[in-house]
Image (cartoon, rainbow, N blue to C red):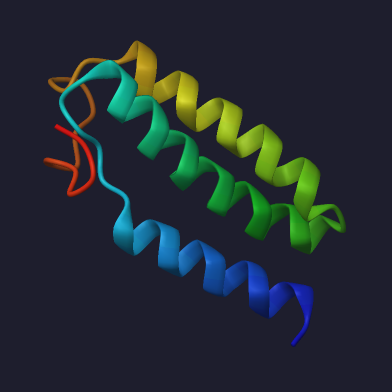
Length: 81
């Protein structure tokens, strides 16, 4: 299985399981997971999935932590709250 297929599968699994919660911590965790999956997929296309996952995870965690549920919300998280 190529890195592209693995990255796409990882992104699909994480995106299907993650949702933004109500607390900033939970939103940071789920935002980081979503960002890491997307970053890994884009990084795989560019040749460095690890760097893409790190950058996407950092951006997603920051977005989840520093926005309120009123600004960006995908509903309650099944893992937090």
